Length: 170
Image (cartoon, rainbow, N blue to C red):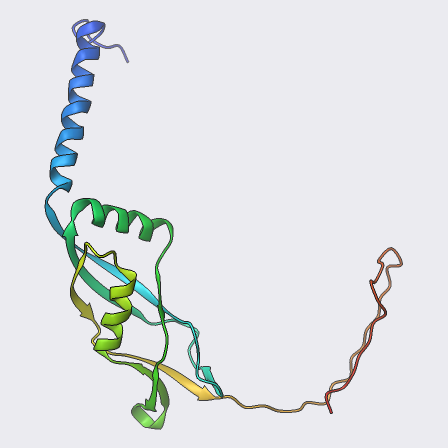
């Protein structure tokens, strides 16, 4: 593609510099204003009550709507894009769910507290969906299974740091 004569040379370069500078100033002016955005956060448990295991492998998600300065929202969105956020929650309540199942439960106050710790101080939480989160759990069942290990190491090039030792649990 051939550029027209009037675009080539010093005048074209000056035009491109002015265009880039005006775009930068527009971007800075826009980011100085207050904006709103919505993020989807995946919940992650920092501790599961002893004697219980998670029923679903799929982690629940919450949707938050936040308001704040454009620079803070831009930083949060960039961080969220490169490293999808997992909201660390602890101390869930254990309660009886629908159809008699056991669930870990977080109320809206507990979720707001967890989101408040996650968000920068310059951002304001506007809304949170769903208002409460339930994560199905089942009691941990322990069983003793009879095992008959068949171990065969054929490659003589391997060097074990110590002899292989198998010991039964009971």
